[in-house]
Image (cartoon, rainbow, N blue to C red):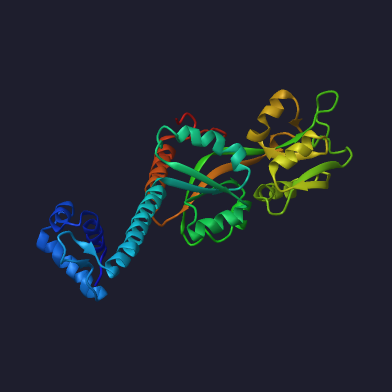
Length: 322
């Protein structure tokens, strides 16, 4: 039976052309090295060296084995190195799946806060619609799903089966709100005002069916049937709705973090009061199965933060983490 050690010893012997020098480099006795070479010769069915000369010379079968052995040993060494590197990378990588909005209102602020505690970690984020994020979680291609869930449970009811039957662990990481906003009129008030029930129908900028923020908004709109909304435009991404609102096309319910600067600058104004806002929670979800080293460490770290702090409404759990 041929083995990798014998091939490596054979290649050293090809270089040194001396059993004594090769045995020294291979950290084996001369007799031990001789037995390994004899084993190769028995396996291949022909002598590998011409021992009749003062210096060892390769036979033709020996030359052919040398060429192939060099490729095999090099390829196997590269494979081992690659697999080891992949394994080390996997232990250090923390993989998230999240709806597109999280790249605007969550990760830019959240990842830097954890950097000092997780300097060796490698963060990766895959953006997709929420059902596809849960599919990635179920198949194990990501460690965590981060998403905004409403308190009415509309998102949870439509999120899919990934976290059913107690297979999912959940942490709340912070709070957010969907707020109705509009471009301002000449007087600085909302161009599309939801607080004027007797006025003309209001142009409504809605979320496309696949967007989970639209699922969170639906229960509020059902409760406020008095709102006279006409749905003329929609988008699957919050950036699209924000652009439409800035373009004076209607009123949109957008995450407060996304439009905070627009509200401060007066580019957008609130189109309704607190009763027309939708409270949301940043939720981190994982499967119960063990995760890689850094991903498990992150879960323990965040769990300690959640247990140590009792955030007031509207105050993020991770405030001040750095």
